Length: 501
Image (cartoon, rainbow, N blue to C red; front, side, top):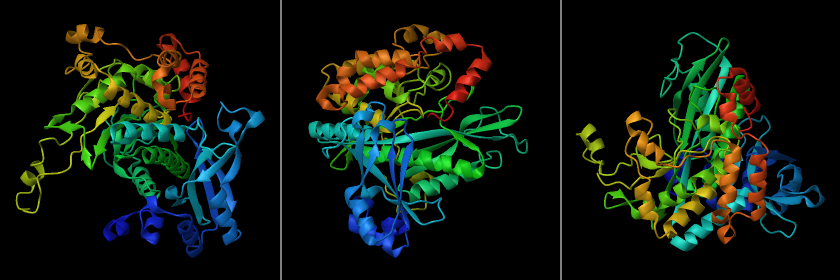
């Protein structure tokens, strides 16, 4: 890491230790705590619901801190994961030093560290979502020699008391600036704190969703991250959600990542962009076009898109978002710059490197050749997704696509270059398979295609069983049709799942 990168890095530990977080050691953490007056350490670990759990330590001595960082601690796994029984539920949580950051909310100087789960034999917990992702990532690199990178787009609503000064326009909030966007300050503070916690952010902006009721105001925002190694990409989403909720609590407003707040208004997704690198080169482009590798990955993802909803759309209100005409996908297809598809190929600056020179004709130092930024975007998931399992699922299905003999033919068959919801393209729409319309249907799809995810021991069979059972437990088959037009029932359902995601 260059000196300039260290000086500009928002993470206090990176600047103090003068090294990237990937190189943090136990001794580094102890030295930082000792020389910066850190009084407490919090172990953090994601539970089955995706929210962070906490174990607090007050540091009584250097030896005490050394023991915590060396040995981790015991926790009751049966209260963290439904698939662990109380009769044999002890787990170890072991800190990952590279994740350390200073808590921005506590008055007492406190260090936060994310942890991994280990079983009674000291082995990684097979069914821990983080370990499933690790296995998927290692298998992808083993088979392809490439590095899978991803980024998440985190959408959320800020819910506050209604204010009519500089009113926002209904469903016209995209990139609106203050004072018409009321919570730009909250978002920019979140960006700053997420970066200090190690998050690599691309940008933040207000989103389409903006509406008022008689006494409440709803304003939608988005934070998009930079492409990262997959485990770090999942971690920064989980930390970002925690930081946003903490800020919302401080501001006296609600932050919700729920997929749907009300019918007829924009829902919140958690889209994932993907790319593969090898020897520092982006393999998604070849000869100025989307590469065969990228198209094979798309084919693999689309072939299992219905089953992937089991990891990305996990509550009944997820399926109030996946409806036509809301920039959310409902049919299995892909396309370029098309927001009605399951997999979108966004603009990637391919062949367009001259733009900055054209806009700045007097800057002779601009270079026209830049590394490719091309990604492919999976648009189905929402805030109820488990980022570890969702990304693992995308890796597994991408790898399957790479190995499918007919992948390129399937990709060609499922490509669309029109708005499939326009009446004149109804015939094309009817040719496409539909995504599940409920958790119940999502569970059926996962059960039917479970072999894809269980191959190479990536997703344990017990985890698939547990996921199918938890989705079926909602008993929501046909729920959207039953609720149609019933605003009171829809409101009750939305309230129930407002903070589940």
